[in-house]
Image (cartoon, rainbow, N blue to C red):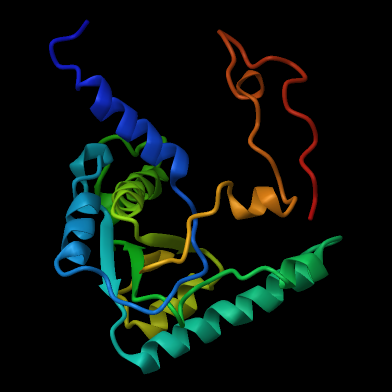
Length: 223
C-alpha cells in the first residue's frame, strides 16, 4: 500500500461525488453560500493544463440584461438544434437545456487568445487547450456537488455570438455557460439516461487491450 494513499473513508467520498455528479438544469431560488463561488473558481484554477498554459478564462455574468441576452442566444441555438434533429426534434424541445434565468450564478468559460504560442503538448494535439479547460470545469463540478450545489454545463450557443455579446478579444472562444445554484434534488441518474437519450456504456465497450477491438462500437444512433 502506498504511503501517499488517502484513507479509505476519504477515497469513498471521492468515489461518491464522482458517481453522484449531475448536469443540472433545474434550480430553486437562493444564493450560493458566502465564499463558495471563490472556492469553486479556485478549484477550477487548480486544474491540470498541458504545458501549464492555464487556458481557461471566466466571465461572471452579473447584470440581468446580459443574462437575458445570453439566454436568448441559447434559445436560438435550441431551436436550430431541434430543426437539425432527424427523428427526435419534438422530444428534444421538451427538454430543459439551461438554467440561465433561474440559477444563482452564471459563468461563461472561454479559451484565452494567443493559445497558438503554446507548443508544449499541443504540436500534434492543439485541442489540448480545450481538454485542459474541461478538466478545470470538472474540478468545479465535483466541488459544487460535494457542497450540495447544482452545476449545469450549457453548450447550446454560437461561440462567435457570445464573444460579441461579452466583448471578448479576438482569438478567444467561449466553450461553456455554467449555471450554478441551489437545487431541490439531485437526480438518481443522469436526466438524458432516464429520458431515453442514451445509457452508460458497459466497460467492455470502452476498454481495449493493445489494439482497438473490431466490432466493439456499433453505429451511433442519429437523433
